[in-house]
Amino acid sequence: MSSITGGTRVAALDVLRGVAILGTLATNVWIFAEPGGPAAWLTNGFAAGDPVEAGLQALANGKFLALLTLLFGVGIELQYRSAARRGDPWPGRYPVRATILFAEGLVHYLLVFEFDVLMGYAIASVLVAYLVGRSDRVVRAWAGAVGGVYAAILLGVTALLLALPDDPPAQAASDPSLTASWPQQVQLRLEHFALFRIELLLIVPSSVVLFLVGSRLMRSGAFAADEAGARIRRRLAALGLGLGVPLNALTTVAGPDWFLVNRYLVPPLVAIGLLALGTTLVLRARRAGPLRRGVTAVGRTALSCYVLQNVLAAVLCYGWGLGLAERFAGAGPWWVVVLWAGISAVLLVVAPLWLRRHDRGPLELVMHRVYGAVRSPAAAHR
Image (tube, rainbow, N blue to C red; front, side):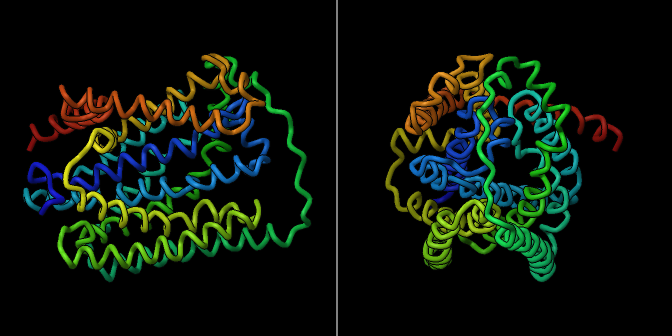
């Protein structure tokens, strides 16, 4: 199929993963651009005061994280297939891989960014690894149960917020001193671990469902370059773009009380539509231009680019770095768009250059070597 490169890689997956990585930056960059960083952002709430800023945030909010989560599920499916072809037991040593990912996420949280997703992915992936090889009936039951409870809780909390008196708290002035010292930021993350990591309660169940959906999309042939695959993608696009986008627009304008629905429930629908549309465009493209090659390289080095973009944003925005967040605090939202574009451009240039000499990103290489080092003693005693 034309969707396969080198006999093994699905070209659309790398492109979509690259788009998802750059899209998650489009969400997180607003947090970095807040004077005082994530701690100040939490204090001031989730809604932007400027309508232009609110609209720009809404374009990316949750959608690309959901897309990245779906693609992670596709990756678990591909690892399961690889193990089956080799005749290896499954999940076998996958929990070891998940533990390494959790450790990387913990380091990323402590040293770089409060809202790391890797820890949540690692936790959810262990459960999904035990489910991915089960029957469709079992997978549907798990996805339905976890997704149903998750949606019911978020809708219940949203209903409670709507029922409470509408008395929004006044925004406090952001405190740039919160990012003036990197050691102090690390200390803050340690002291308020529960507060900053409470989002794991939302990320883990959502990831379980989306990992399973991603696995089954791969198994259904949604990425195939044939008429059956095209038919599946048309249905997914109709669901995600035809239903998800209007719902997302409604929950965006409905106000901050709908934040949980707007951030966690509706975006996965849009992400499914983006996945279908992106795959179709890649399959129809006759050749890859410089932009697509750059996005593909970002997708192939997704873990490294995810961490690097957050490191760059921290250095540029925080007080212990260049302090751009404080310098441009009154400049309006467009400087944040320029910031996102600049960091994205760096990734689009650096990732292809790295892959000229290596077949994986730097953090992917570290993960691979640590996994190999852990695996070798066990293999030696077989």
